[in-house]
Length: 63
Image (cartoon, rainbow, N blue to C red; front, side):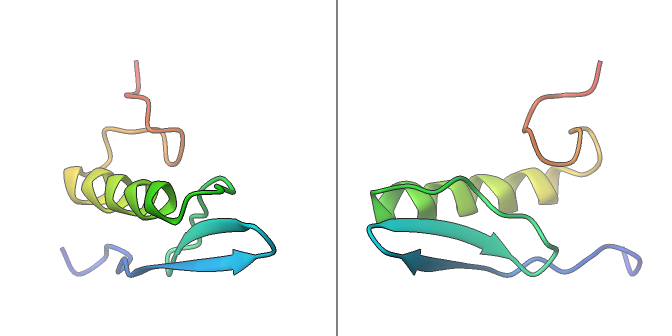
C-alpha cells in the first residue's frame, strides 16, 4: 500500500540497556539483552506487515 508508513528497525544502546526503534516512531522497552531488543523489533515488523488488526503498539488484537 502506498499510504503505509515504511518500517526500518534498529537498536540503540544507552548504558547497559538496548532499545529497538523503528522509523515509524515505535520504540520497544529497554532490555538488558540485545537479542531480546532484536526480537522486539522483529515482532514489530511482523505486526506492521499484518496490518491494522493491532491497536498500534501494544501488540494486542483490537476487540
